[in-house]
Length: 398
Ligand code: LMR
Image: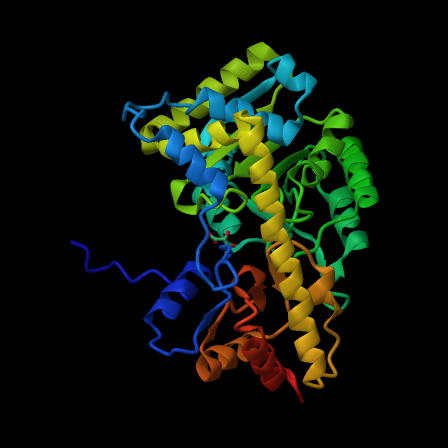
């Protein structure tokens, strides 16, 4: 019956973790998956999360959430993305549901797009998080790509980006990373976001923001929502996928939110009901525990300020590791330019290493990372940075 089923190819990101776990070497280093580690290389549970869990303990029943998830968690999420005083929230113009983290939010949106705008396509940046392609492919939404990154400058190809926005048919759907672009660590400046927003208005494009790293770019979630706020100021209807995997460290809890700005409250009610109907046959309703943690933290001023401090702490440790990696490479006498390690932001460094160089890192040094040359800076520690720098120097020197 299943004889024709071939093994699926390994996932380019999660497959790296599998290979890392299978390697018995004591030297092994995992800078593949984007998951925060402390300076001992250990996963972190934030103090604000521990405190929220302490408050939940013994009080939680195991009832189903509604199909659209926790209303409290959704309301807190909207304030975080759209701003405490957002008129859109007051006017109830946002259709929002709790999602299975950022991936689930993107997938729900993609399915919604396919169902209600069947002739539309999605423009995806080159490069992007590999799973974006899978998500819109499985939702059967045709994909186009747009220019984003400039390999020579290792920065933004702003001219190419603007050309592609201008050349796309009016009313196109674009996937944008709200901050801390994955995998490149390259974001437009505020001024560039304003120009992008203006051009979107001219072309009547729809921006769908994936905001998986709110807080990881600048250390301040409010500042990291700037791109979204600029688009809102300009009166766009937007879509937004939020994830609490990285900024609250709730990776396995699958806590997130999908929101879509509508023209009025009636439309928002209709859109939300349709999102729920898409969720129902897929997973019925989302999990309760992570949602409760999020709503407790964001709803309590004391816990929220602890959270903000802890997000900044994570972002700062990564910035420190960027400096250390660059300094180590320079001390080793590498003559290649490494400024992009400290210029890029968020969790990743898009190193510019080739797939063959990455293969050497893995085969000769037990260093695991994605073959596109992305280094998850969250996996770099004071204990492994010298080893990592030396290995990078060895495989990149000519
Ligand atoms: C990553 O890019 O490494 C993370 O977003 C984890 C994942 O699910 O791919």
